[in-house]
Amino acid sequence: MQEPNLKNIEKHLIELVRERNLFTTPDQLASAGEYIRHQLQSANLSVREETVPFEGKQSINILGLKKGSDSSSGVFVLAAHYDTVEGSPGADDNASAVSALLETARCLQNSQFKTSLLFAGFTLEEYGFVGSRHFLEQGENGMNNFCGMISLEMVGFCNPQAGSQNYPPYIDSTQYPDTGDFIAVVGNEPSATLAQSIAEVMDQSVPPLSVEKLVVPGRGDQFREVTLSDHFPFWENNIPAVMVTDTAFLRNPNYHQPSDTLDTLDIEFIGNVTKGICKFLETYLR
Ligand SMILES: [Zn+2]
Image 1 (cartoon, helix red, strand yellow):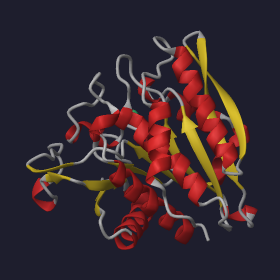
Image 2: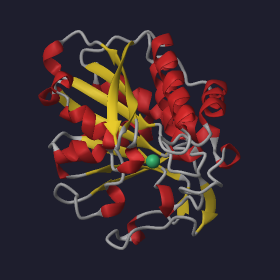
Image 3: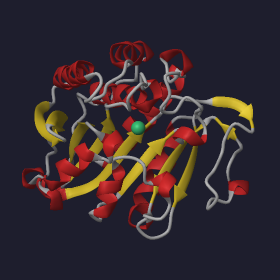
Image 4: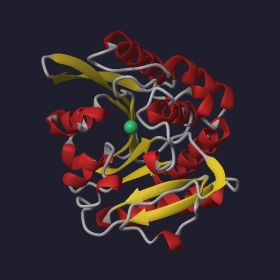
């Protein structure tokens, strides 16, 4: 693999950070989709678009496939949503993760895997995982064939001050740091093994990165804070899926606000997360 390049990540962020909403800024949502398509094509992936209808309008999922050598080993999905809520430029939510997704595609472009890897830019996550749900409902996506999934959900915000990290009430916060400078790997019971592998490889292969793992009981439905990304429709379909996140509103005060801007992000942190994801995929899909 090639090493993640912070200049590339910054370039992606500059292109992507602006409101990207189907109802208020549809042109900006569409150009973000166009940018993702172009970048995935530049990484030598075979790219297709999937039209996602919603409330009389439509948007697209962008899907870039890196075909593995063994078709019987299934397809692993690496995803990030690229839409925003109304009124937010969505730097952390979720341009940070899209930048990591695109840089991962570039870093792995010369790697050969046994298992196929699908890079997905999902749309309309902010309206209830509309894009990822649509993706799973499409027969042609070979729904029974998914061997795992990672949703990159906000991976660019750190706060090195003690007391900057909050937790939902069902988490024993004494078991976790109170400083908001780690990346969280979140799974449910069926994805416990996958979450363990991701956390372990990221932790070991990127020394400056602190990694914390959380596995919620059962399918995880009743733990609202950990269900809020595109991994959730995969959980509903019993596919092992993990969210990799800076923990969103439990740390970042700019969540869904006009203040979610590029200057609040830690680009080196995004680079470290990207490297950890690349290392994991290289190990797991080989
Ligand atoms: Zn989001």
